[in-house]
Length: 392
Image 1: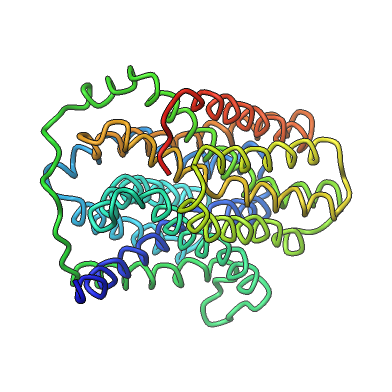
Image 2: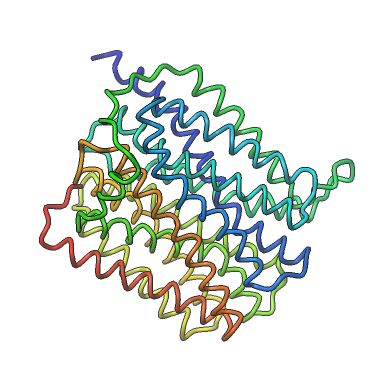
């Protein structure tokens, strides 16, 4: 027993670096705003980038759950890191519309593979009764990469390196280097996986959505990621529209969101060990509802900042709670359930598209209204948990 903790830590550290690499997908928010400025795009055109990233979750998540049954979770994570590294290589050669579409497509595919396989891989290392808090700590590590991205991009935009001419795109080689380190470290780390789930097909996985609670969780994750990607892309636009800021000045709003999401993940990993998940979910959803109302009716800079911070804190633990509940509801099919839940990240495609249409029509209040609909569903989900025994 004396050696078990150091051995567990040795396995956890490379897995946590993979969670950091998982956060690379959130660079699409700030990147889409820079590409919008560079190429003179509309909100609808710019929002196609995050929508495209998360579109691949619809196609690849369930097949990845099946792939894990064949090659194992660790190898699937390694494959995801290779695809992610390739996606980060492309923007080094330019930021044309087609090139960025290709880059973000590969980023979405890699992240779909990673999010589907990494969470179950963590469950082979961490005891099940601490799964929600461990997943939340992984989200905390992921959020660090998310909130660093705007700062790295802003640094590149204001401190262009003449020899390379990358400007804000310096973000991509920085994160690509970390992805390569994660590949090498995880490859060298022995992780003993439990026996693979029983063989199943695509249709059998989708039939799990007939389970009412699994369907509730699936839609809940769609709403969570829709709010996440929506705030990521809309926060700077709110400041540009309501405060007259330029992109460089308004970019801090994305980091503000991720800073408070990071704080929420770190505190949530501790709170969830003491507090029932249902209670903490209620607090989280209440924070987001207050914030949405504030953004709809208020225009002052301090109020906008407070609302962005509340959304970041409130949305930080929703994924972990819902994901853990889904895994525990059907524990004998973790790979398949993971694939279904990660397919729910397709909400990151639906929400930005709807928000782009709404904001082009009536301004950023339209985008906020779409996110508010997602919060209202999470309230509904929370109430449905009332009759269930909720794990913490």
